[in-house]
Image 1: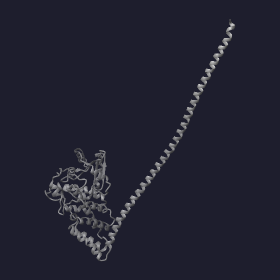
Image 2: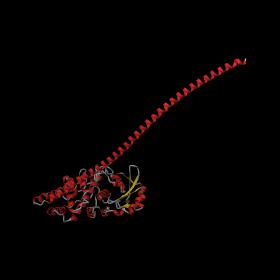
Image 3: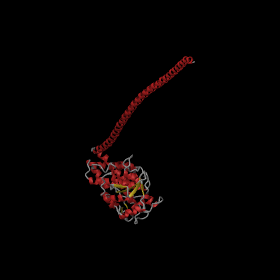
Image 4: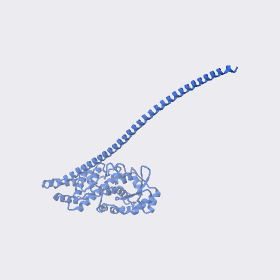
Length: 421
């Protein structure tokens, strides 16, 4: 299970396809390039195939083309190329186009974040894949100096502090645009953190950096490449790898894109910052000043409470109430499913009871027919006995008659014979 999945038990179709991904053949790559089904992911913006393929458990090949927002599949390469031109290439994020290989910098990434406007957690899930590609493109950039670190951007502390102080005083967010920008940047950083964790081999199942680099048209990354794994996968803010913080962050982040109000978003951002605050190595990767800045923010609720304003308690209570309501709704769904299963079980039991009843009726009918057959058989046996007795009696009578006839004939012959002489 990949640690940035939304569901703990169920994988989305695109995740299953990615797990079973296999390399394109040289011929397939050439066809993609010839048909212009490409992204510009090469070292200097050269073309690379926008189609990849996966093999399912039955051994069937499925061709896939995707961006963060959407994906399409086909059983043939030609069909997938058509879907790329007809639909997929038009769904590419502006943020993808904003980050160019030739000019990867914090400024470019920040500009991309501002126009991202994530509409759902699926957007961020696809962004993880693109961030892996972006990191590899940055590593293989010809202008990159050996031993240099990957680029990274953090949330500026000043605007976050101002929004938080304003919310502390009034209980309302006035700068909704600022909160939305911070929320998008939180998701952007989270996606990049997940991507760098994947490439470092710390995710489960492991992501093959060598395979991904080859898919982008680069040379393989040796497992002993210290320049990549130790020098490049590093930032001025700390090592962008996390084994334990990511699952908690993703659990909160899945609610962030669909939050209805700026206040809800700010509370979710606060929850995510609490997670990274507890793990000091993550705090510096998300916010300017790291744990020190977050410690300043964490004092605000105490100051608000001391001033007699209870909006913060209310907001926290509302959040806890929503959490409990979600849990109750989940339990209700489970009970509903169990009742549905019970009804289905009752229906199946009723069907079995009906079949058993029919079997019992059939058994009784068979028993009755067997009794009738046995009775008829006994009658037939008695008839055969009577018939044999009758035949014996008839034979005896025929023998007696024959003897009497013979005796009478001889007597008649004896009476006639003397007169003849």
